Image (cartoon, rainbow, N blue to C red; front, side, top):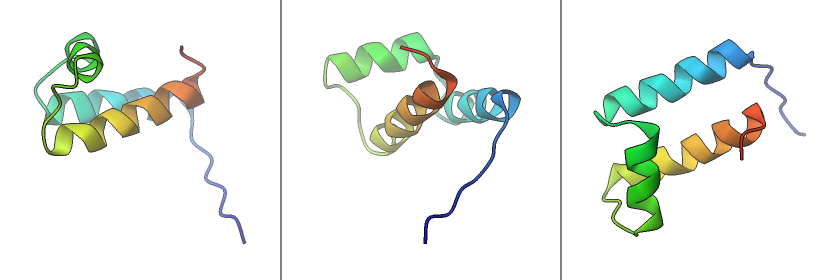
Length: 60
């Protein structure tokens, strides 16, 4: 059985901000590090979460 969770756009934006704050960075910096394969440790998990959020928000 598939579990469906409804989230609002605001909740997704808040989640994104919380992830970035926890890693003391911004989306541009983390994106650049990902593009250059410079992510370390938990940054990979954060990057995956941010990509999922971007997909749900309809971002590129």
